[in-house]
Amino acid sequence: MQLLLTGSFSAQERGEWRGHLQAALPGARWWLDDEAFPAAEIEAAVVANPAPGRLQGLPRLRLIQSLWAGVDRLLRDDTLPAGVPIARMVDPAMNETMAETALWAVLSLHRGFFDYARQQAERRWQPHPLRRAGEVRVTVLGLGEMGGAALRLLRQHGYDAAGWRRSDGEAALPPLLARSGVLINLLPLTPQTTGVLNAALFSQLPPGAAIVNLARGAHLVEADLLAALDSGQIGHAVLDVFATEPLPDGHAFWAHPRITVLPHVAAQTDARSAAAIAVRNLVALQQGQPLSNLVDRQRGY
Ligand code: GLV
Image 1 (cartoon, rainbow, N blue to C red):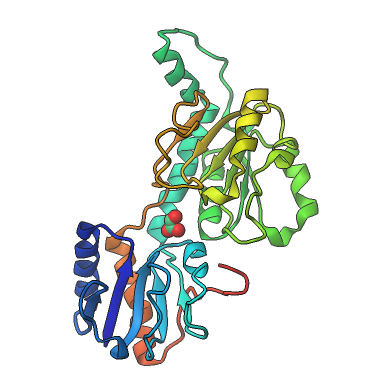
Image 2: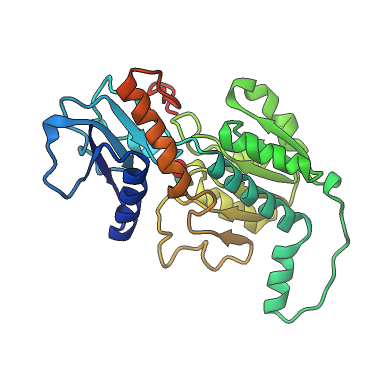
């Protein structure tokens, strides 16, 4: 089997991925996209946000396996060969990592740890009243693999957490928003969910609520967040993802006292487990077995 590994990797990541993939499927020939690969022979491509157009001209391509959980950027490439199945990365290890990030954010908000970090910078000694976990109401938007894992972990830790998915319907959302001190976004990015974190949504939250965006930068209307932080409608935002990544040097978010910035690390793909999961699908392809984690191109995830 001739396989192509392509994406926006650093040279080091590339080598590491090929090492893990080769170890998991030693019988195959793994090509990197900067090598003179035999385009006519490539049967599957393992991809991490490949350059647009990269998957054209592969006449025997039968599977595009993403190493990323979110395939929004991949699907924006309108030269993707039609009819070739696309699988996204679903890795329990990644779901767990995402749930840990959600728990860290909620716990830090609940216990005031972001406030205490700010106070330390000002050499200010000021304890705040204690709340119990059960008094902290959280809503998780998106109940896929990652949203579901986050919701379970938050509940295990005693938070009063609820979840919402688009299929619950728009009408189910306002009552949840009205009770949410923390709103975590783990929706897939689709045309329907682009810009969902906007002024109209913020105004439905209790004043001072926190936003935790762990999904995609395009879910958030950045100017609306800055205005809501200014007015106090939003008390704090934890952001892992941004409209432009890396977050540009002069961006207002970097130094904002009520924004915590992470460099898109809420659930990094772990090559050790993800390579084995990608290979499972390649073996299924070889053996004519059903493929897992297929993306519905129409739905967008
Ligand atoms: C990360 O954002 C991913 O989609 O895997």
